[in-house]
Image (cartoon, rainbow, N blue to C red):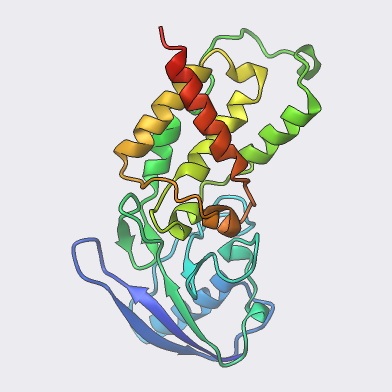
Length: 248
């Protein structure tokens, strides 16, 4: 397979970036998108050119590092698929592919396709954990959890923090991400002691990071590779409202 690539190149956050044209031939349709870029980078290195910088780690759809905007969509055209799991057979031979970094004020560009998503880490740091001392590890069956709530908590916990929800939202909102992290604890008995303060701190940090407000268009859910439901946003809003009413 042969492709025309238009890739965003930017040396660092202090300089202007631009789209640069590349042609790549002999692409195996069973290659992943990242493997295709690996091949391109090998060619660039042989030509003494600078390889394209991009984030990656597990390449198994788990870590969320491989965040790219491909042909105008976060992670590309395949639904419920991360960039690293996107195969080149999902594109047409001879197609022109546009590759850009995620665009958001809270995700400043580091280089080329790499953005700084540490804002997500800071949101989790302020409230995304259980700090109560529970003593030694208990047997899992000691604290029964309703199956429906356990399933919803597990679904929320599947969020990999890739930032596709932010990239897809016209306001660059992080509501889907934050609501998933709030929900995974709010639904479980282990998360109740800090339930009120957790949602308040995480929402405050989200606002401080410069993320926009929710647009209610559902674009975040549509582009999420783990199909996190926007029902979590409604739950977080209820949690936040209730926390305000119950303040001492």
